[in-house]
Length: 296
Image (tube, rainbow, N blue to C red; front, side, top):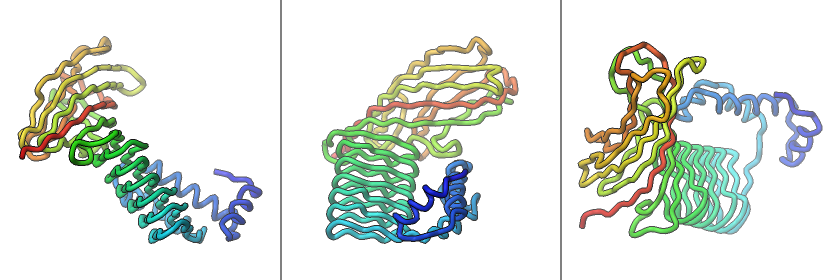
């Protein structure tokens, strides 16, 4: 990546430092490499790009703290203003507002009483919590995004945060269909699932697409239904699968199941009944409406 020296100099002056142009380029390239790394934990991504931290450190950016009774405890973190805000995650930002906390590394918070504790999480609005990797709440009140990559929204609550909300998730899997088994999709592509809280019910709609290399075979399904966790007993109460397109190979199919073996999760699965050996990239967009009503 190449940046004009005039832009570099302007940024350097704004930061009150004069690092060399090469240091800016190295830092930006390192940040790009982090984003392009194999998905997983931020720690794993840092390990894949060991020079990233040293390149960023070369910028020697001073912390920025503004507002009243605000705390800045993160490495090169920023508190833009407001009252009682805390940026404690490394490279975290609290834009402004009142009583917000950005404790996850690379997290961003704004509004009132919000917490962005997940790494690379973003939260705004009021009294919302984004507590895991890449979770997002862009407004509203009393939403909870506690699953990998979850985007949540609520406009209030019954009793607890997250007990009356809607969410969107993305799940994926690279599957070698060399057997007739059902294969799971995951939020992080590896092992994270959509865990449903105790005494909760979700209605869901899933758009599922898959394709083999070069789009030799492509597939599309829509799955709708309801899942219930009744006192830690989780079951699919209703579901329908609509095949939108499987003309390239009608032996492929999709379904949802409830994992009731300890994690209480909604699981999307795909199969090739004839074990043709096709390698398929599967991606699902999951929309849920979620309500929780704990037993007395």
